[in-house]
Length: 282
Length: 240
Image (tube, helix red, strand yellow):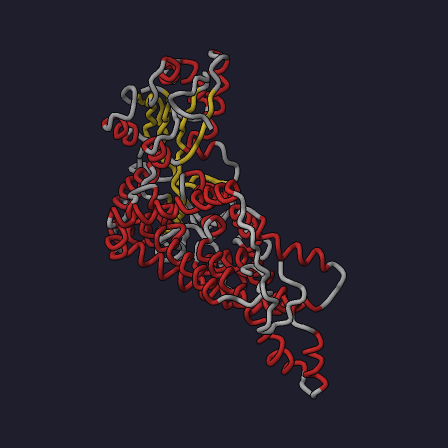
């Protein structure tokens, strides 16, 4: 995933260049693969332009409500992911303990789980009759069918992406740099704040972007755990699904917004060029 | 995944309303004993979703809808091989979790904070529920306020009636409008009595989508005594 020798520095090893061009059939297959991936996106954008659905639906309340809900819920989700994911990534990167393999598997699990399974599991855990439901109810919280449930679903499915990237970032910081700071009298907190976090910064940022993209696209866990109602739990992906059953215009508009947002983020990430060790993009 | 048209295989693809999910298995068994050479492939979803899929070219041979509206629309648009035929009826019921919950009487639906689980406005049950609610409101001292309060209590619009039922079975929702026939198959919900003035009945219509004798035979068979008996044992009122 990440290059193990990645001490963060500007002098990354210069990429060797390959002089020989790939064979024609390699290029052909690569082209077919790329076209296969590009065509659905292209078709969606064409349809959006052609129908003029984008402007019309943007004026409608459903799309705007869903857009606002998507942006605000993913923002809150990211804060939660960072608050708990960063310490977890640090512990996983820097310590060894009994059951660490299990902990790492648990962190990765939501990536592999079908979102519908995640939604069901969330209901059984944090639903009104769930394992933690009684405790939450005492605290005055009933999650299902609330915006809070949308955030819980997003945090569940998105945090693995952040934790994985951040863990790789923490691992890639050379121990001797931190040691040098300690020798110079820096406290542990200062080492963390002045050395470790900044050096792991690009990896953390990459993790943030991925986690945000995953949270923005979250569908299955949300519709099962949070339900689907305009303005409260209907995010853009849920709107796409709901609208598809009625008029297609709003579905196209919401889908286009999602595609453009995702594409924009990925291109921005490319342009920013994370130093090696960011893991997912390099 | 079968392709329509060229597919020469002799099985029938039946798209059935979500509320038919259980009975359609028994129908299949009965059908197979009459027609062992014509196995069914059944897909269940909200009728509006199924109709939309048929419009997009899904390879259905027959649609069994929880209303007469969608089949008629498909027929009007020339997408069917024959006109729709009503084959069953089911009344609309209000359900709540089996363990004492927030909704004991129909009037409780308007209590602030009650979680009424709705279904996507395009699904047949949403229209029936709307009618039931209207009739229910008319029995209340302040019909309009009652309607508004109940509407404000809708916490979700699920995909189909079975998804709404599941949320009530799990105890996450306090109540939902379903078909009485949904109620029979569930041990986790109880029926909340509705005033006698509330009486909404869903009409199930089947329509032949693809040309071909076997699809026509299946639609006709739905009106025969054998199918009627299966439907009746599942709580449906069979016949036209």
